[in-house]
Length: 208
Image 1 (tube, helix red, strand yellow):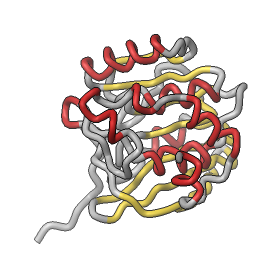
Image 2 (spheres, helix red, strand yellow; image 1 turned 90 degrees about the vertical axis):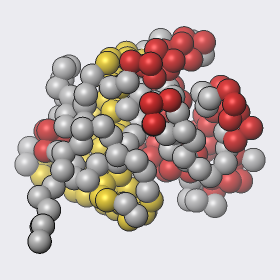
Image 3 (spheres, rainbow, N blue to C red; image 1 turned 180 degrees about the horizontal axis):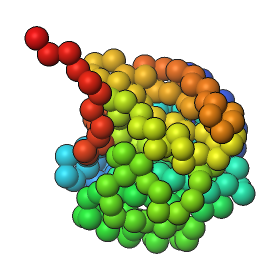
């Protein structure tokens, strides 16, 4: 079912499809919504947060193409599901969540699935997170009106960043790749809609 659902949305990476099959998404959604784990909707979490739809999660992971020797910054731990997927692919995941309750719940779920290479941190990373070093991969799981420069500066050369950028109702799922010290490419993958991170940077807006 997972493969059939996601292939129609251009998710064709076989190792990723196998990973999505092996890691039970229903274990990470709220218990009252287990039967909706694979529905094409943003499943609500505590604190007014949501999980991205399965197809957006899969397209994000396919675009980022995380390698076993890479370290990942995830902004927005949420349910912990994407954290677990990233951890299965990467050397190390640093995941930052502003909501203590969500962070605690995600930690319990990750431990239940024996995920040991994900370090969960409480904090506000909506405008960047420089607690460690440069990252090969950055995954931002809430939307941003604009992408703060701090994230671009936190990428290694060759590093990739996924973010959903813009204002409702039209937002762009975007892959940013760092090509050099002052050179980044930006590819719009698809349009979608997702609630913003808490405390996001707001662009200058024209007011009459």
